[in-house]
Amino acid sequence: MIFGAAVSCLGTSHLTDEVIRRSKRMILDTLGVGLLGTSTPVFNTVLQCSQLSFFNVSYVWGRPGSSLPPHYAAFVNGVAVHSMDFDDTWHPATHPSGAVLPALLALAETLPVKPSGLELLLAFSVGIEVQGRLLRFSKEAHNIPKRFHPPAVVGIMGSAAATAKLLGLPAAQSIAALAIACSSAGAPMANAATQTKPLHMGNAARGGLEASQLALLGLEGNTQILDLESGFGAFYPDYVPHPLAEVTPTSHYSWVLEDQNIAQKRFPAHLGMHWVADAAIEARAKFLDKYPNADLSQIKKITLRVPSSRYVDCPLPLSEHQARHSFQFNCCTALLDGEVTVDSFSKSQMNRSALKEMLRKVRLENPQDNHSSFEKMYCEIAVETTQGETFTACCNTFYGHWRKPLSHEDLVRKFRANASTVLTADVVEGIIYTVDRLDTNQDCSMLWSYMHFNKHVMHRDERRYSALA
Image (cartoon, rainbow, N blue to C red):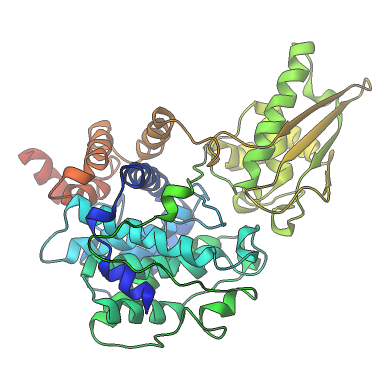
């Protein structure tokens, strides 16, 4: 019951400046990758499925004229956030924002009294907090996952907690929402590197919102769901829950987000690929510094020393989703191009003969001291040439990791690059302005209104809105 009490009792006075600052960064980044994701095939497929025979009430991001029941809007927008694996990552391992923010915005649109920006920030922070607390009850959760995809396990709980907070549910209904959500939790890692993986995020957003709506209507669940081995403990064999400190309206609260920062990616791929890319870029620079006009076909062998993780060991990826989960692909792309970008995963780039030839030269090694943890892992690369020379590099912390976070300028630059694929420049700047002032904004409805635009498709309602603006 203590989690339900915490969700119910936490107020805006508990928010700290650092939690607000980091939450705004996460919100801005998530909106950008979500907008970019609206162009993906998997997003379009789930959108078409969700539009069949349903009454429309909440906006679909980047689709003027398209709206859905709130739980389905949360679903398709959640899929968009994770469709390119470009969303944020936390420690212990999960993608925290994508299950929470789409559910909150879909719900907020339907409320008779629209929440203030600070109320939205509070609900978002509560959803992140619940995920962080639950993950810290398991040592296994600190490692790169092997059995369950974490957003499907803790993300749905975060969505339930966040939407319960926005609905103003009391403690008993808040724990009921978590219990209901727990019964929809879990998705196997076997679907990583496939089009199904983004559905895990969409399902988490939808399931948590549905759980809160059912709890609001009086549906109940096991009030001890978070304490039992047969409850949430079913997902982690070493799960040992600890009681939370009592929360009162006037007490200080120690947020996990204040102690543990977020990783935000520079390119759309599994987090482990960022160590590989940075190491490969450094080795490339050393090679070209000595031989400025060298042909990279002179590379004879590439050795990568990375953690053992089966689902990101993909020697010859056949799809963009496999490429996003391939140590080998991201290494070779970085060696050939000096960077990995959104376009790196296009068919034309993946089908390059030079890339395919280089992929066959990569060998993986798994040193025992290279742990399968985003907190402890590293990547070493050794590039051997046909002349017998070897160029090495090592990355312990990539730029964008929580130990070396993106600067605010680079985060905003990433958002502009992603969002501008869908939105006009003035709308992009409007979102940046709105998110930056969420904690002082009494009406945040402009946020989801902006997300509905698409510069390639102007719906009649948007034409009218633009003419009146």
